[in-house]
Length: 553
Ligand code: ADP
Image (cartoon, rainbow, N blue to C red):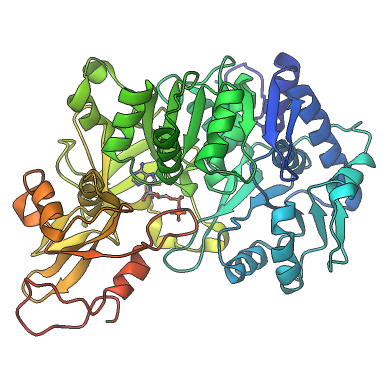
């Protein structure tokens, strides 16, 4: 017997229709790439997205065509996304922080037919466009007055291009399983892999994100997604914010502490989300200027581990709730959020911070297990770590073109490549990436835990831990440190500080001081480069003759 309820396909444009009808006057404020702050509303944004769709259709773009965007977080970028999805085409976000040759590789792999680009990245596109034979058109997200001279023959200014449409258009009737968007993982190991979101997965993910124990956002919120739309879908905010009618504040290309503070303050932002590096810059700005955060209620921190001192400063000094979150491009991207279940809700001070160091629990729509190398599920004891695997309606079931098959098993589990443990209350904690974990004498050492501890030393600006070949133990940890300006902590200071806080055999064998730690395009520590840099490093604890390092084997 079938249910007798309506078939109402979960299509992304329904989100924008809802925002336009239920929250027509709610604002979207953007720091434009041209400079000034510009304001629009959900009703206007919906109207312009319909024009984008109409215009794309007129140009001959069809269902399933991949249409790339190389752009900052602005209202224009959102309306382009919805316009693309509204004809059944597929928005494909490109990360401008990748090397040009990686962008070319990704565009060719996706066979992008058109590209929406911000002025900032036009010089880059001029260099690479000829290397992407499928690319028919470049739409420059500005108006004729700001349109620069360009060597591209097929470039048009967005506003004039859009003005040719009257907006009298109906979204295409699509199947909810059709592709809506595409994003490549940054490929810090091997070739980038394409993740293809469907309308259904985007809508379900947005609903999941809004739930009180996930992001917990509502129409009363003013949301500033600092996390870029080109990095894992801005954590779904371009869909979850219109779904609930929150005001959106889009930071454009300026993400330094002072610029972000200005928006937080003038627009009275209540909710924001970004990777830890962004929050380090903001906290530094606040400390230098003595400013406060009177309007901000909640900050979601993820993408890499939220250092304990960061959570503490937001909560103790600025009265802002921190939600530590974990996810990945393949999960649309949210996987877990560290909001407090009743058992932990009463905790305060250090005990609360202990929990907030965890990446949190899975919302409805994410199933999670941890297995050993033989695929056996591990107990939820908060100690036993293993490979973290996930399933759900917004989790990838394959990569585009069939890459990375080994990460998917026949029971539908996706191997995240992360190493984690889960506690009896369901709180997951990442201890490492599988490829970074240090195997010392057959036991695993978590580099993330050591890094978190090292950065809580008052003189340490940034820290990374890598495994260095050791003739007796296979690998031992080396701590690489960037000192804070004007501070001169020595090896003994730092190891002395860490000594009583971790198991003795976890303590790094040595500390190397550097001016800079290499980062990936998404702001994470680039351990492959670091391991290469230290491939000849000899630990003072290693007394026998050296074997070749694992990177050079
Ligand atoms: P990439 O790093 O390739 O750009 P993603 O942005 O999708 O890809 O990153 C996903 C990875 O980032 C996760 O698999 C995990 O290793 C790491 N990550 C995300 N959030 C956290 C977090 N809160 N703590 C630790 N690691 C995290």
